[in-house]
Length: 161
Image (cartoon, rainbow, N blue to C red; front, top):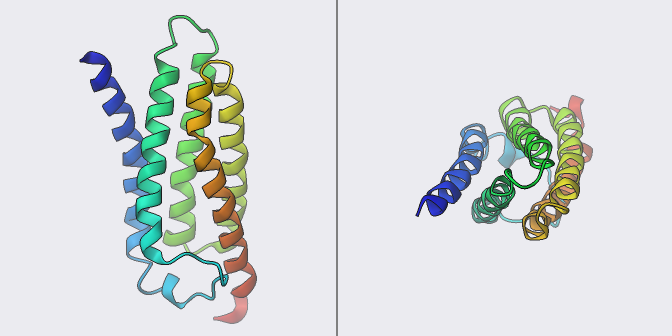
């Protein structure tokens, strides 16, 4: 029972990061974001919520699986530190893109986030292949998000407003 509670706590922590990001996102979608030129393959807005809910859940499970190995693997602390850093950068992207409307800076941040996710997967792999694999959809989604961010940057030059 204790194990289930710890897993749920890990998921809640990751979901909390999503909530922080959504505070900045929700208010910008009907106004600022709606008026941006976007890539032709940009998913409809309703897709993002369920995808991120799923990804944050997978992140929480992955972090829990790694945390469980803390007594038997000395690499856990460093792997979880990288995981936490990528979570902070994840939240920062929403604040910069949707909150500050800084599209280019957000592009730089999401590229750093992608590298941090990849680094997290690499550090998780020797500890738990399942945990590392659970982060793969996250890496793939952020790869798509990079291209969406890039097209928003290209299609909305800074001096066009």
